[in-house]
Length: 311
Ligand SMILES: Cc1cc2nc3c(=O)[nH]c(=O)nc-3n(C[C@H](O)[C@H](O)[C@H](O)COP(=O)(O)OP(=O)(O)OC[C@H]3O[C@@H](n4cnc5c(N)ncnc54)[C@H](O)[C@@H]3O)c2cc1C
Image (tube, rainbow, N blue to C red; front, top):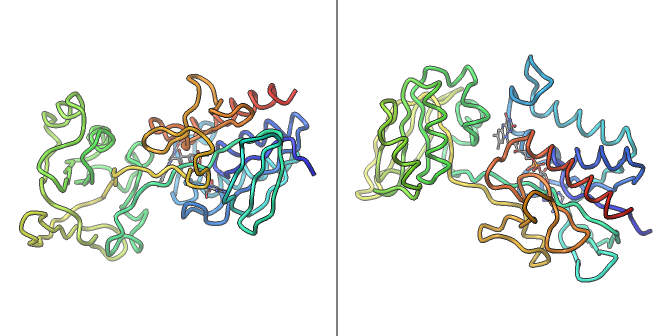
């Protein structure tokens, strides 16, 4: 059967696109993935606790609940959802061909890619046990939560996002310690200036994390000097990773134009990719904002442009 539109992904971008397209009677088929990119169906919000900045939930909502509600809304209007990962696409001719992990071929007139990005983690001891108990991969999302307020916080990283994270955290933390494994930053001069001169920010150069310490919540870090290899322990109230994201674009294997960090390139202000009839939405094409409401907004944009294309 030829599908009108297939959506790949299951975060806010994919489900917003699905809600719009199903309400437009286009009966989208959505592949939500099975631990694709290391994340379960529902996307990145399912690995966080409270979401306090998604409009409409003044009392906050858990990330998992928010995604479950979006999934219900997609289904309510006729989206068909399959818990399978897409491993290959052929976009060289129409209809497009999309392949599931089991090797099934699906044909579609239009495609929306909303496969998100996965925040990189350190893979150190203590990380799994203390995840979301004082460790976060998103300062803008979690910095204001009570568990981080008035604490000494560490930011791991040396690029622009790490500097932005550190600056954002100065609003809530008693002190922000930037831990960087080199002796200079990759961040732009403007961002460096902003934090280097900030009274709440300190730097710890030439150190990397060896272990995250604490029983039920983060209490400290064991650090290793990248110069001498010597270990030392410091007390800390929370840790923010700012070591980048990996967009989930591997399965495209050259089918769409990507930027140099492997994010899908879209025509400015639109969700149109390098192939007519293929649209991208959410974090997979937006290295800058990476927020649920932005992803949802871009899912809406992709749906409207896709509907226009199909009609
Ligand atoms: C710890 C943490 C806390 C956060 N907290 C907040 C917050 O409080 N507020 C906020 O606004 N934002 C928050 N964010 C950011 C927010 O989660 C993301 O911006 C948003 O989820 C991006 O949505 P998306 O739809 O682009 O994709 P994602 O949420 O990344 O979802 C993409 C989905 O697609 C699936 N997928 C990938 N490849 C395939 C494939 N080949 N086939 C099928 N499926 C596939 C993935 O498994 C994933 O489930 C947080 C992020 C993290 C990591």
